[in-house]
Length: 318
Image 1 (cartoon, rainbow, N blue to C red):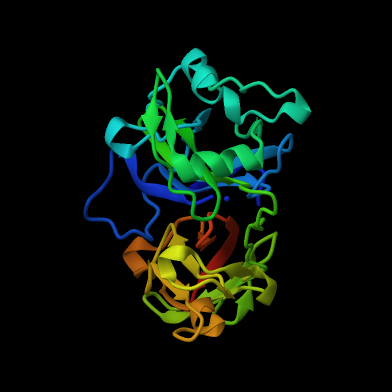
Image 2: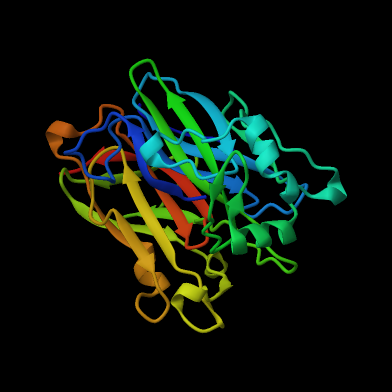
């Protein structure tokens, strides 16, 4: 059986690209190779002195075990540079010294984090100092840059996942609180999954389907997964609106109709976001174990991420 590995269930959104080998012909929703499906910090916006637990949802083919290595960078680490931090720790400590939180006697954490399925990062920065960096940018002897602080101050989380046959280097932006009254974000989490109106449970439920049969695929997304947020300046005058939410759908067998569904207030409903369709494998591709794994990953438009993984045992019908 192929396995989806999860570390401290709970995901921040992946940066647009992942480094590593890929199959250009496989649909985004098809799990057939090493994948990083989501990365999360919990809490999503850690306060000064608060520790965010970093976790990931990964997929590795059957029989392959994944190893993890985490690091972070207070500056931008772009996909074009393979997420390599442009500063070492000494340079970063010098460049960001004025932003450290004096009330906590904070020091900059090591940029190299754990070799484990999860990692921990303690926020060392004062929100008022980060607000100044957001307004003016950073200009130091070692590094200069401006910051896109919509949703919080961006630091880069880097995860390297490797098996015996492949490796991936994934980047993720963790948003830190900014200003005297920071707006905190919560990670959205699915509450359940259903296939053909059968709730997927642990241990797995059994569903009888014909080869190639198309059925409903449903995610239970609670109303409180969508929070009220401030309207960013890039969108217009000050005010508030509901978060936008994107659901990414995955399966290791069969075919999912829509790789992504989205909630945008006034344009699409939460019910529409929760609905999808899945086509069971053809008889020739029927899994030997009869088991299929599904995953749905939720992302809000402020960097919050959550996911749910469930299995179903298929019984081949007429």
